[in-house]
Image (cartoon, rainbow, N blue to C red; front, side, top):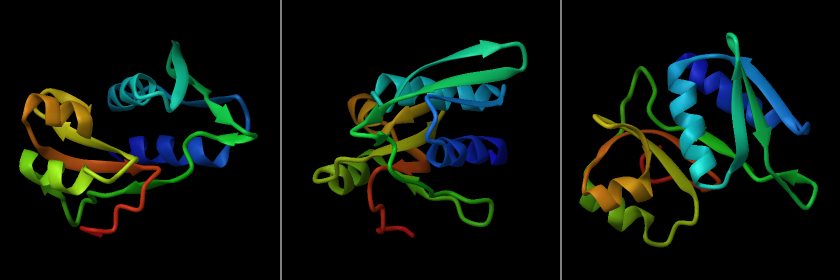
Length: 129
């Protein structure tokens, strides 16, 4: 999980079109969700490295901020009904670790499942923090 946190933080710091990070299966799951949700253009794996094609809008990265929600000292778990009530007015993205892998909060709502909230992108996410 620590490596995934570092990868996500690196996305925010770079103004370049491509970010590079060591290959990790958890990072690949996270990047798949970010690509599906339109926050990155894509990514490729070259050996033991991931090349992440960042998406920019009006001179800045589309990913404006990210917050690590669950930490080793404190896991934040949500049920589907909590997701619905806490995301109804929110335009950001939550990444949730589920038995099905890493999913967006929107996918969790469609599937009727909850899980551990690991990241919040482009939103305030103040409720549990």
